[in-house]
Length: 416
Ligand code: NAD
Image 1 (cartoon, rainbow, N blue to C red):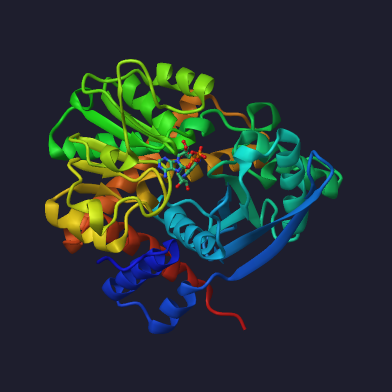
Image 2: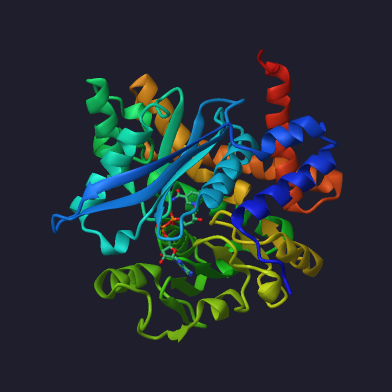
């Protein structure tokens, strides 16, 4: 039986492995196990029916040795402090792997956005922002979207922050709509980054993208955009899923049509020409590329042996447990770990922040070119480390990320 892993167990085990391989000073290892700062908040709002409801939330700031804290905000009924702490730690390593000058943070509110009206979500977002206001800011901590938050949520955060300051501060948050200082290409940045990594891995494995059969778990921001890009690149998308279940079509499906179908019916299920399958079956489909783009702990010891993909590209954060990692590695699956694969999102967030601070606006072409350069460099850095150290891609990425953060801490010194 597999030990049951929380996201934080996974993150701490990954840190332990990296610390051991890097022969990290035990004191430094201990320091990196904990966030620098955590704020718990209770977010009380008036619901549409006039009642008052209180939602628990937090903002966790893991490490800022390399630059201001950076990380998304998640709204989900299963949000816990442990999960947000793990996600904050992964942000620290991710920003270091893709080499952007940020530390790592994450925020979360335990709520079910699917059962809330737009007005309730706006009041929740504004109240939450006011409660974490002292912690965030363009040079302190810059939030962004994550599961069940989007560009509109970010616009409310920007407005709330700006109202408190008395002037407009677009650089306090990223992932905003274009109309209020968002960057071209931010919406699909994470997925484009995932696909750039998949393309580089496919070159190594010797197959062409337009021959690839692709399966995607999750049909939200990351999953849907990844499906769209893969389809536009000529891949055959044979399966996708959301929280209601999955669909499979051997001959390939058109994700644009699935998107329209989901917009009309609320889920990807019962799409014409496809067979409904469970999320478990979806992960085990025979394919070239599997992109988990939903939540943590999807590939575990229980199903890792049944994964048939040649490449697993982690669009989601923490979809694979440490025990499943070992199984995938033994099977020879080419795993592109989350802190590399999905780092395109925070990279274009960084571009957005730079554009806001300099009052510039870059074209979509510029953004995509800069993103491609960053992703290909990060992929090659991790791949070279993996070859030189004879370690799997995940360990290599962690060694690179944790190593760069440790170096920054050593260089800064410990005050006082
Ligand atoms: P989202 O809310 O837009 O989409 C989440 C999707 O997952 C939805 O389609 C939902 O139906 C589906 N889902 C939920 N539970 C599921 C389950 N049990 N099985 C299958 N599907 C399920 O969120 P997102 O922004 O696309 O984030 C997805 C993952 O990507 C998360 O792990 C997030 O941390 C990570 N990520 C997101 C970004 C970003 O820029 N949005 C960047 C880096 C990493």
